[in-house]
Length: 350
Image (cartoon, rainbow, N blue to C red; front, side):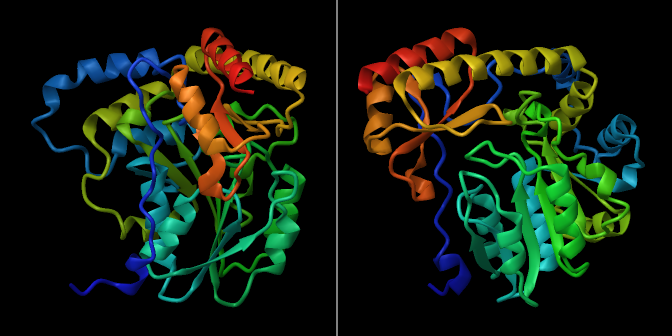
């Protein structure tokens, strides 16, 4: 069997482990469930499943445009942010051209690059944080796309508005800069970037967001990219027809109006963050302050073994071995009850 060389070296994505009855704090899902407005919209459209989806996502793009104060031409929805990354590398990466990102960050950036025969360069993190100055040093004439997660997955750290703007000024307009803001709605730092404000200044800037996290629609798979209309038009050429299903489009458009659910999700996250910080402090564990809905924490023992011990106690987390880190886990911030169960289990295994 003849296969493409770039595919041979791709490792399939490893999803989080599920266990019946266990609380799942492994995949950064919203512990409050899904947006009630989105659920109502799904139920109201169950009798339309015999019809193909709106191939242009017109209603969803209109809703996004109204929400952000832009025109629909600035938006392109996808089947989760993962598909958006494929749009980008399909459009801009030719064989052997390069993607640049960080060493410890979301694995889908590497996957998207390799899928289209691109090469990947990595810059180091410092204290779990992107070092934009180091990324600048690694740009070459072959660098076509830079992926930056803000907040970063799995560390939850962020870079500031000043850092981002200074970085963009140094990057050639021929290199596309993708800011993955999957967790932006959770970010509370005063200097977290308003990246959309920069779109008209930097034509090579693309911002991706998702409905999977704070809106609780991970099971429907819908994300979107915001960029200059000429970039969106180019990306649209790489999109499969009917790529976002009817229920996903309907739920996402409705969720944008659910400010109450977003507020409650943020409040739950802030309280859970404070609680878990205090628990980690009592145990003397190092962790990174987070702007997302998860915390990266060093536990002082092998994370794969710790994962199994926690699983036996009815809690699933994400061990960081796949990121090359043997003594840390990433835990989603849950409800108060879930956080307490996780904390009790962690104390037991430590």
